[in-house]
Length: 356
Picture 1 (cartoon, rainbow, N blue to C red):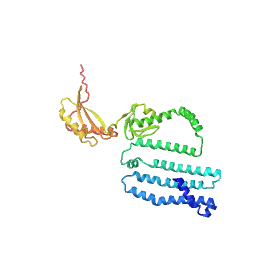
Picture 2: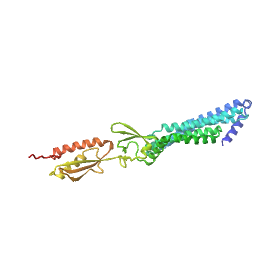
Picture 3: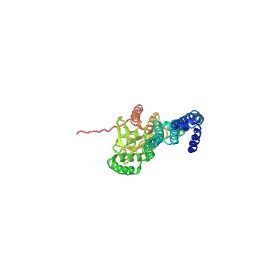
């Protein structure tokens, strides 16, 4: 189809004697015609497509048309440059190689820049909106963005080398040798990279969840990168752990499979206390706390007849693991107040010494 268009346009321009006499002017006119064609497409076709896209409920079509706008119109103009170079008589050899090569390379660079920029600017919220409101995992989204940009860059470089007819066989051979050297020199970095892939695939944790490491550190996952995972502890200390360690360590995820977190409170009351009343008071304290979930409901269990106390355990779930310390503090305070108001004694170890 492009060849037919070239032929018809060239035959039409041959009808003008001035253009037949000055081939450089003819080439310039061809480029101008393609530039006008690009403007016509911008004014009519793109505008019509935008109007159609606005009437649909999808957001992807608006994004796609906005993405196509600049690179498509630039490509039309550069195709005009290629057409101008193909007009007879041919340009001198050096120009007939450099100008088409530059035009094709610019077409690739324009599309690479548009794709890369779109990937960089697209946020997680916008990606969710583009795909019909579906929740995309933040870690998978970040991995997709990073890997896609690398692949696009490598693909563009290789294609440009092919345009300029660079022999890639020695390049690939050298890349193999260099790759082995890099792999040996950067084995830790590669281990972290593949560890990051393993973390993404296993989905053991994600950003916003609370985890406990083998070493005992507990905190919120704030970033899962290709090389490392970052967690923020309750002391607002940021810990960076290489993914090679995370992939081979035991990780306790307090936020999974449900975001709620279970708290166990051990309470001892004196022998002779009304056990049913104690149980009712503990449940009342739990139910009055707005951070305690209703399902599963709080429960009280009698655990042990100890040496100087009857030991109960209050089991409940809070909405957010980050509230563990604060809610434990508040619940214990309210339990103490309730026991004091109802004259329920909390025993403590006592020792009686008889002197002779």
